[in-house]
Length: 459
Image (cartoon, rainbow, N blue to C red; front, side, top):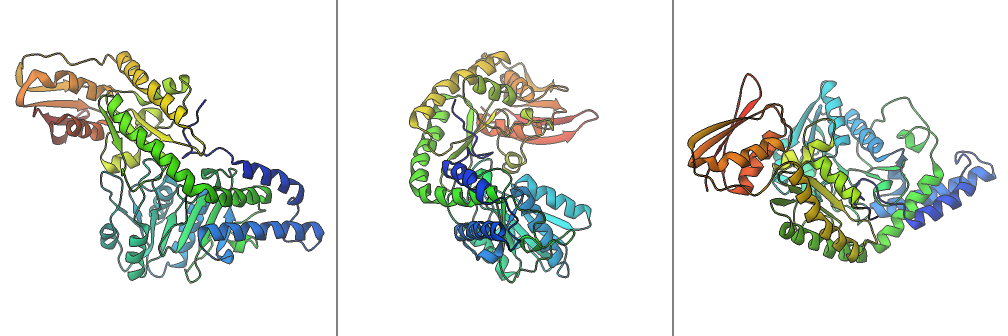
């Protein structure tokens, strides 16, 4: 059964498995102790730190291991904000950062700080000019992911780092998705990553803080990991994480070239094989193994279940696959279609046969989901009005858009359809539907119940 969700968690690399098993026998003792077993454990920890630092591109004494990538993000943000509190309490992040960064920003705001989100374009990329406009004299820290976890777009980290350096602002880079493919270029100040993203064991994060960056660890003092990550290190997992990072880096160039060909095939053929689909993310500046697309008139949760039944494990940013009933913040920030979203992220070793099998299954699965929702070819009807209003209150994604598609031909070209909906996703998907179908989105207005979204028929 092909597993196509390596952006969530990559399968354990064989080198990680070997290193984990070996270090369980050699690395169980306290590396802070001076007796034989402690010295042996210390040697393993030092070797792991040196290997990880080499991969990151920093000094070993600048890098500490944390219990997770999220812990590394939270520790890094809190430590720099505290260390630079005299500068101010302003934090700058991109609108498509991982939730760990956005949650840290929300906690900072709750404590009295301020946060500015830098917008992205429709490919999910920020602009250096956006960061230049956001940072000011009170900015203590800026954050930017190296590559997006949902759509794969690679961010202009080096250029943004130059902007931040010119303003005297440190830049924290979340490199969780990209570090297994190569080092992060540019003058970053703080870097975080997570081992389970590159095939290491879960429960190991990396936090690198450059010398000269003001950093004040938060929480009770602890003598381990430079005081930045308290508690006894899971040494076997750390050793496995460092060993697997070195191994995947050795394979990265060849594997990236091979997977990019397969993802290019997915990008082209999904758009060709599935009607009413939007492939999102930058087609060029992107991770080599990831592609995301959204399908009109599809319930995302049902789509994922049906693909799973067909033998394919994929992920989604659709609101209907979560308990929040709101679309992915990444897709929302990009302004692209969110309904029926599928993220395919290929693990190392994926074959062309597995990708071809997915492409054979996908069109039928999408068609089947649409059929269960009553979606068919629109009937040609004579326009009956210049303006219609649809009551879609209580209907959830993708039903408001399905109802809009059913009646749009009932108004004359130039006429309008207003959709009354209380589904939060409609705010994103109705404009995206208009862009895909060639109609004009005129905007929204609040009603006593729900929101009214107005569309002008153009074709």
